[in-house]
Image (cartoon, rainbow, N blue to C red; front, top):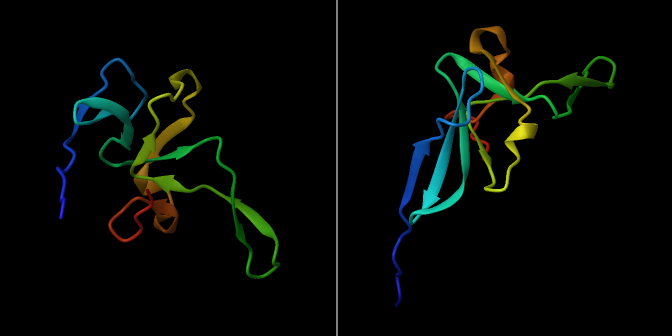
Length: 108
């Protein structure tokens, strides 16, 4: 049975890519650039301003717009950072029910 060798993943802070209260990391698989991981600074969550998310109002049955916040996101190697649309906001200012990427609500 061929078990194979497990990949080695490493990351480095992309100091040349800077956004307010968001860190961007280059991810490498066996030394080859494989994408980006973005995370908000401590005390912040982030959301993509291009996302359109909706919930159903239980009283009216109508769709209502909501913002989904994240503590982590992954981007491909060919991502165009000139079109970066993520924004960080203080975690204390958002509804915890709409924060994803945490221990209890992992989204990847």
